[in-house]
Length: 201
Length: 231
Length: 158
Image 1 (cartoon, one colour):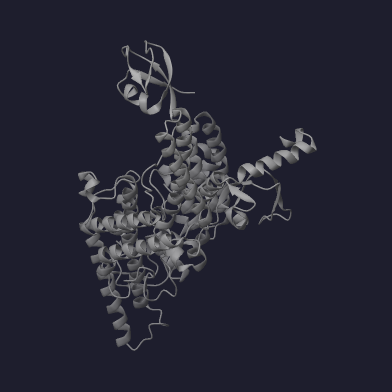
Image 2 (cartoon, chains in turn yellow, red, brown):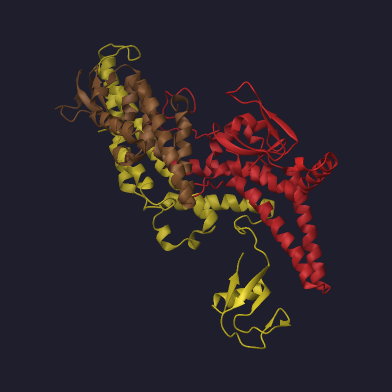
């Protein structure tokens, strides 16, 4: 059936997890472009046959006409699938530029391996375009993606932190279970070490 | 809520509301929200962005000065907090124009990036972009076309190699993705009284300040940022 | 309903592409040479009167040019689905029947000239929507995701 391989190519994107890349399927893509060339060859030979028989292709509605029509429709369907495959992958790549990094080497190796040569170049050109926009605006846009939090947080001490600790030039008694109002940046190291917990709400 | 108060208080409340909603930070927040909720690109708020940048710079200088002069750390951190918020808002506004995150997917649907072909061939939309945005879009289009040309189009038969037309017999550009404008948006009136002409009803929809409605985008398109804000 | 005009706006839409791969039973009114659409044919061609299943993207174009008619009597499974839906729309597993039930319904309805399809889609949607709303109240988190998908579909139906 015409166009079956092309749809399989498209399904490689829809069946995967959203926003995740599968390895670029060169082989299947080439098979589809081969089918396009076959469509075109048949299309041309049918038109030539009609011309040889002295028939007007615009008005004649015979089996050759419908054959040519179906091959033309199959070709533009195949083209649509090919375009959508490449275009939607390019959108995922645009997203990588925003979320992961502006340099190809910043991408994890397993992602780099999934890109075709042309896609790698596209990644580089797209991040260059974004960088140039940011430098014109004199503002980095790929940082500060989440709203800033309150600089002060309430914490509870979970373990004996030890006395004599000085936080932001203030000494306090950080006894176990005591609660304090601290600068987020001061408290975060203790929270990540499991010595304090943030109290919310 | 305002109805419970006397007439005098209502006027006072309105004045207060108007004042509050016209600070640049609030305006930027509104512009960002509108941009985020609209299905198409809106006019770039050039003056607002310019003012916001000037203010951010001013506060930055003030914070540095305070830190140098040994000012009370709590006061400094309050200024810093304000600064962080303003900066985040400005970045978000510029970012959301380039990149629009849809609520239903983990991946981004990129506004300018996604509809670049559509925006570019439409004068009205193109003029909504700032100069740097225009340059960005132009580059995006070239990059995408080069990539698609290399990967697909050059491998297709003659007559089928266009990136805009499916084949040589197409009479118009029939491959250009367009945003879905025929969609519903939630909106809020920012004026005391706003009347909206609906598509399917003789009677207009009347909204008072802060009323929220769910309407077709195209019926309020012209009023966004003037009488109506998106939520 | 979504047809013609907005088709090209969705040119790169993956879901739209997959929906249009759904098979439709047709009867050929013309023959065609140089095509591989009829698995029972010996040569690369299709004869007038041949009953074949074509993907929607091809069936629609040929239908619009009066080269095929859509054989709605062959929608056996759909008739069965219809009866089940009438009985209890909320509890039919639509995904297993056709993963794009509404979208495909919207596309096929104008072609088969069966006005009841549109009505059935809408009433199915309404019944299931109510059901989902109730469920969404119980688990807000998943609800939003489902609703979003539903809203998209609702737009296509009305």
